[in-house]
Length: 227
Image (tube, rainbow, N blue to C red; front, side, top):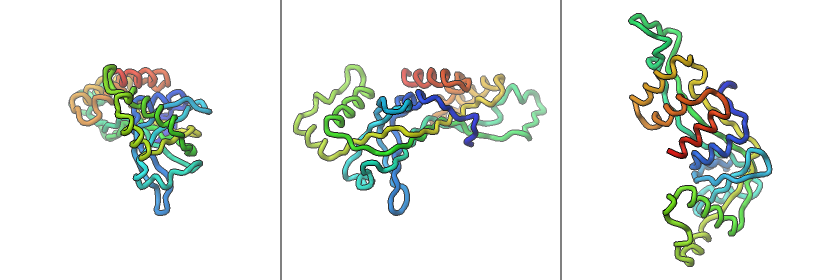
C-alpha cells in the first residue's frame, strides 16, 4: 500500500501529525528483536526542519535498559485507518448492471514513522516536558502540575527518565482516497459515516477535505484537534 503518490514530503507536517496524534509507539533494537514501548510525545523545534520530540518512560519499563544515549530509535505515529468498500463508489458504478470486476476493497490510512538517535534529558527539561504535556491535554480550567504535592512530584520524577529525539528522517504516508474519482468522494464520505465504526468518522472528514496537497493536510489535522 506504500506508493509514491501517497507520500508527503513537507517537513512541517511532521510535528503537525505529532500534535494531532501524540500517543506513539517507540521501538529500539534488543537482543531478541525490537523492544517496544508507548508514550505520548511532546513536539519541539529541533536542529532539522522536521523538528524533535520529547517523551518519558518509567524506569521499570523493560525497554529502559536499551534506551541509552545515541542509540537509533524508531517512533511510529499512527493516525486513523478505515476499510474502503467499492460499493461506495456511487459515481463510478451506477444503475442495475454494476460491473465491479476491475476494482476491490482497499484501506485508507494516515501514518508517520520518524527516526533518530536518542538523547537523555535532564530533570529541568523533563519537568518542562511533563508540564507541556499536561497543558496540551487538560482543559483550560483543568489540572496543573503546580497542584501536585511537591514531595510526590519529586519522588515520581525519580522513577522515570526523559528522552529527546532529533528527527533525522521521516516517512509520512497519507492514503486518503486522493487517487479516486472526485465524483466518488461523496459516496465514500457517506459510506464511512453510515458504517461509523472505530475511526470511520475521522476518516470521513479527511476524505472529504484532502486533495493530496500539504496545505490541505495541514488544515485537516488542525481541524481534527479543534473538534
